[in-house]
Amino acid sequence: MVRPTIKIDTAEFTKMYNNRVPTADIADHFHISKSTVRLTRIRLNIPKRRGRFDENEFMRLFNLGTSYPEMSEQLGISKWTIMEIRKRKGLLNRKRGLKRGMR
Image (tube, rainbow, N blue to C red; front, side, top):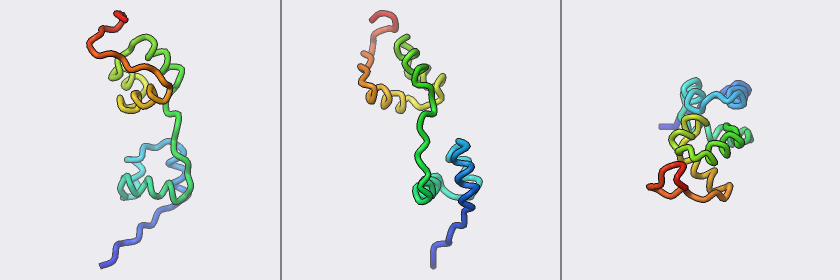
């Protein structure tokens, strides 16, 4: 048995991806997996999406002591991404157990 060949309209795929349609929605539209969306993006030499949030707003919320879950909700990114951005910017990790405003 041979694996079926997937036919994807590359122009439509590129347009959807560049219009920031979520990967899951692109996968549903073309009846493919999210990993196939990623592989198709790579094959078509489409750059990764970056900057899905406002870095100034990130710094403002971080400096106010806003919790990671609250930042996640307000910025529309995951808590994991917030921690990765914090590391990339060289910001210190917050100590657990300290209440905001007590630092």
